Image 1: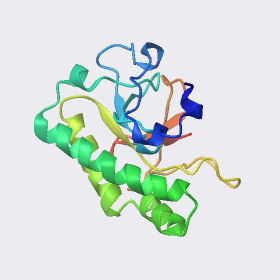
Image 2: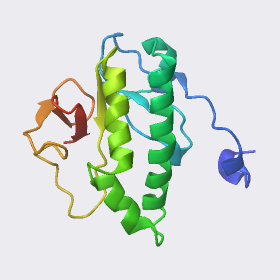
Image 3: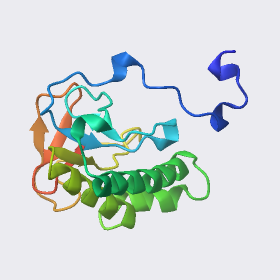
Image 4: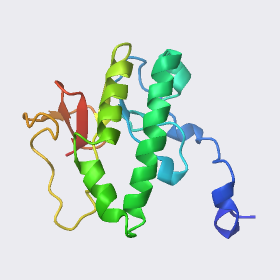
Length: 169
């Protein structure tokens, strides 16, 4: 049975990530935290260069760091799902995702800092790039400092080294 014909697909665990979507970049390549829970993803660690999934065991993170990442991912993914559902919670969820001081963004920034202590890591700040009036940011959503173009990545990205934030660019 094709997955799109399966009425129970939401109740099944996701398929393993295909090999061609796993990062094959050098081990020291920076990663970014990106919640993909709304797409039934369970690993929020993505390569900053190729955007592929970075196997968590490759980074040799401690249990407290893994728990911080997992906690943030489940929380942030739920809020992102509410924003994407375009329901009565959309405005609230969008406000939470865009506010650098919200609990979910503070948890994400802290998780990225914890990962960054052992492997270069950035927090992928919510970027409503599907909005008709979207324009790339030119300042960090956290400190309002100037963002720097990341030139090694597959996709245009802007970084704030100070706050370890990445946004689409």
